[in-house]
Length: 249
Image (cartoon, rainbow, N blue to C red; front, top):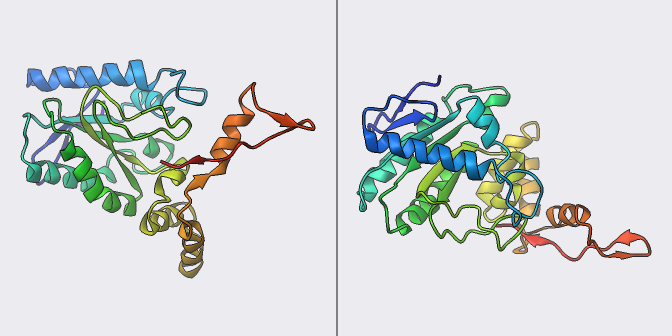
């Protein structure tokens, strides 16, 4: 069983989803709710997702290896400065969570839930303010809450961050996160540094410059793969016709 993670500045406790003896009944109930959502939704299949497989293919292995932690910030109007401190603790702690190397490292997930929150603009604000700091460390910061309109990668009408519980989630950056990082040069610089560490710094700068020089953030590969997996892909002279790329979210 994974151990409880404690924020050194905020005092926040993040409990493993496997934990069954949490003193606070409200936190215990929250952990149960997050586990149920992860097991029923994130590991399930959604027809509107736009691709085959579960909503998040990493959640199932993460649950099996007990690599997801959940913390609770109480109150409908928590102090923004305190929530920011909690997320800053998450930034400092995440890289040291076990295992810190090997295949299991990509399955770690640190969830800060705000179950009583009603003004979700706090989550959006902190996400916008702090995302760059996480990306620079090779991490991703995600905002989840009821009604979140962030579009999916494979289907823009599908909203994968629309969740029943308001949350701010930290996870490892994946190679497949490329489309989500095209929007800013510093994000792409962090991506290239993480996944092409052997490239000299000046070569990385050229690569990032080429990738971010255009305001067109289309990622044709994702659209092409989606079309190739569809039985209704149009053809011309026996060859598939590319209908145009999807935009990265």
